[in-house]
Amino acid sequence: MTVFSQTETAITIDGPVGGLEARIQAGSESGSLAERGLAAIVCHPHPQHGGTMSNKVVTTLVRAYRDLGVATVRFNFRGVGASEGEFDHAVGEVDDLLAVYSWLSERRPDDSVLLAGFSFGSAVAAGAVYRVGSVEHLTLVAPPVERYTYDRDGRFPCPVCIAQGERDDVVVPEGVIRWSETRLQSPHALLRYPEAGHFFHGQLTELKADLARTLERQLGVDS
Image 1: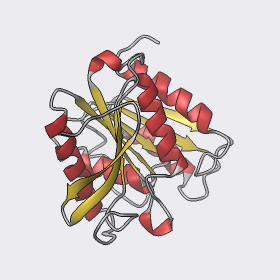
Image 2: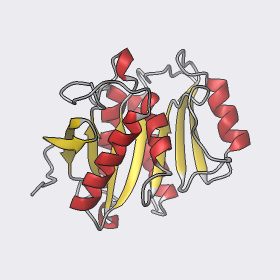
Image 3: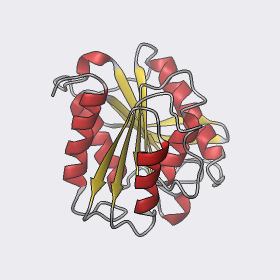
């Protein structure tokens, strides 16, 4: 039996092409969302550019969820770290996420699932959100909307939080902002950081706090 505890635990999840290295943790019992029965899966940035589940933006997202009382799963895509397989251009990586989602749903069947991703990982999360049973919320940090397909006809099946640094030199900030403000019709929030680059150096504490407040608001909890 897999146990989510207050101490983050290393596990292996069966993926489509082999084991996926992962870490799981229970949410804080005192968090504002602790009574909601929520679990979040967080996806890391591009594997071919050094992206892993240990990325600082990923771990910041994990801490934000944890402190709110949300259980978390972060994992390495195929070919990263101890995860088996090879990079598959956000196609096989979506399948990896679907496998993690199924694993989580089997072990916490009463929980509602939240998806999140940073950069490349946000494209994987967005691709998977239409292919799973249900997702309560989607968080997209620095989404490269010019390189991957995200929404379907301007709509997602759940509320969305988008975080974008305006000094990003990997993703085009103006494109993300324009996409958020002119195309998306689903309920969404756009968090803008005028001084932040792609990796939010010096802005991670602010990102964590802003995401927590936004999640509370979008999920109907008074902060």
